[in-house]
Amino acid sequence: MPLQPPCPICNREAGVPIAELRFGEKPHLPSAITLHGCADCDFAFTWPRDPTGYRDYYAAVANDTAQRHGQYRNLPQAEILAGLIASRPIRSVLDFGCGGGGLLHVLAERFPQVRFLGFDVNANFPSDLPNLRFSDQFPAAGHDLVILSHVVEHMADIDQIKDLFGLVGDGGLVHIETPDPKLYAARPQPHFGYYVDRLHINHFSQRAILKIAPQGFDVVAGGTYAMPYALGEFYPAQYVVLQNRRAEQAVPAAIETYLRAEAPRWAEVRAQLRDRKFFVYGFGDNFHRSLLPGGPLHGLEGNVIAVIDRNAATLAADGQARFQFVDPTEIVRIDGGLIVCTVSQFSKLDDFFRETYPRSEVRYV
Ligand SMILES: [Zn+2]
Image (cartoon, rainbow, N blue to C red; front, side):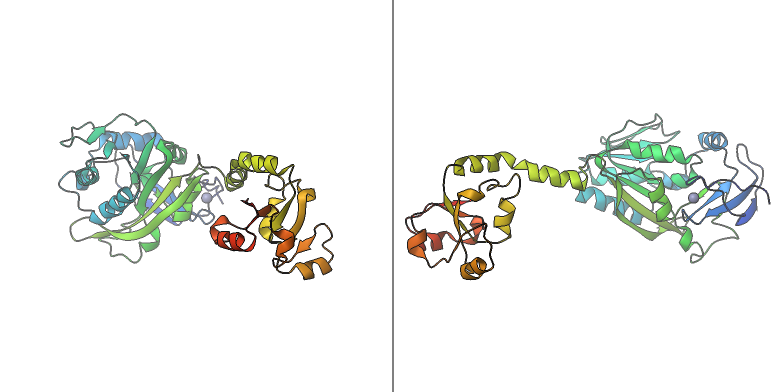
């Protein structure tokens, strides 16, 4: 058996072709291709796929007329994107592979305070809106939202798709929309083999899209819908929205930050209590945590006269020899001493302390 081509995503050798396809002669495009699958990536791709040929082809053809201003009819897509823009602090939007720019016209009219940029290989046309411009120059990075609408299924070089994630700023979103191969069979088609052609060279699943996303990008939304295409026809489309969380602290580091954040405050409490003897109110979790390194009572076990607790008798009998215990009703013993309370100060103990131990100073930690 001849060697099969490698999966462009995972580089493993693909299985035998799912289909062999033939087309008429066209400049820059192959007239015979095979379609292969990768089960690991949940992905299918055509072969051969010469990036130079495809680049030259797209540079030579006119933009998709269905995407032109005034002819854009993909309102479900515009609604999905408008929802994203409205619900997040998005100030700049890039449509990479914007075609005729129809989508951006709809969005730019709706969000006059947001800057929109459309890029395509031949998108050097003017805009009639102040917050919308088009360019055929590869865009700069740092956008809050990058739209890749029916772009990545046309790109022969998977590494180039991966690079596009670099156009998103910290915390920003990538909206990727492609045909949904899992719905090809469920959608009526105008002719045989409609969904397998030589321009859709990548057939993505959501898993495959995730596999090409760099580490630090998480899925925040996704779905499928019937995309209005030619008159009265619908195309099965899927979209996935990923967020750039690379600048966020990882969970372990975020917890360390949290624990360190109030260190000076607790060091000050320790310094104030170092030369004093005190009662502690409550032998619960908070008390035990307060004794941990960095905690307000760390190293001050010897300063504790006794722990005030309703279960004082039981605790004393349990042989918790490290501490003395005193029942809250032993007022004569407690009143006048400093009471350190490790229970939250929001728990309305104030009145209880004031009425029960009127001569005591209470310190919440
Ligand atoms: Zn693969």
